[in-house]
Image (cartoon, rainbow, N blue to C red; front, side):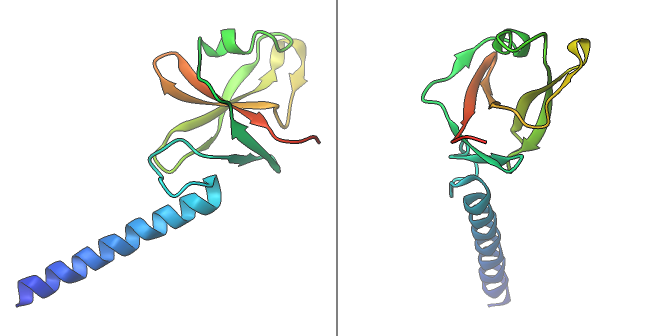
Length: 121
């Protein structure tokens, strides 16, 4: 009886923990499934939504269209530890962007899901 009660209590605590994580993820990234890619990312007071496709390349190659060679920084992490990265500075050309127009989440080896800015400034 004690073992079954203890098992029930532990199961209930685990369920509450998973529900809490899922609820937080839903409010932060717009998705209950905390193991999946976010539905949206809020960064720098702006909202970013995922593009419909993944792209391949390296950080330098993906941001080559931006002036100079932007340095990628991890600006946030998902609950599962996925890095949300952005090209936020280019010290060579004295460019230091506070916010960015696009965020990237790595989905595989040299593949990324871009998250684009929704709306205007």
